[in-house]
Image (tube, rainbow, N blue to C red; front, side):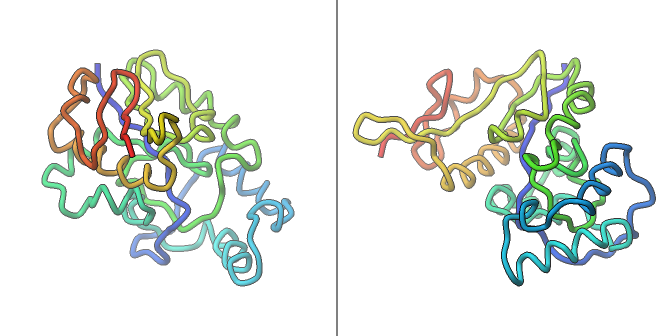
Length: 220
């Protein structure tokens, strides 16, 4: 059974691109692009002033702007920690990794995408993608590193959700922003060591996290 690793996109994205604009999009993406046009920008983006203007401008050019591989487009903490450019086995990464995008569904690191702005909890994106995404995950073993909002866009029969949790004064709390970095490091470790079985998760101990059999836990 093939292993797939699911990660979220990042809100931070590189501008521009050197590849041609999209030649075609799925029906779901097309419907979402139309919904974006009709939505109230302030409610859709939750941004103000310059950031709001940029989001509006970026989405107006979805079908005409230059594209680049998704792994280069996303620039957030998880992606910085993966450090794709220094991976020795990029082909293995490209084969196993899928990104759960609100606008494009499940995409591989090498899929060409434009800059865009759409959270998966807007415009019913998660619900719209659920059936299509889940179909692609059939007969796969899934290592799920998604936030809760993105998990609403997928369903799989075989897999494991991975959480990074801090234990402070006896109380467990989500790792939060720090958790994004360790997730990226974990993804890199999975690929570099060809890990596909959760029984080996105990061998990952970066930054003091230890696998309990259910979660990665760090005492602080």
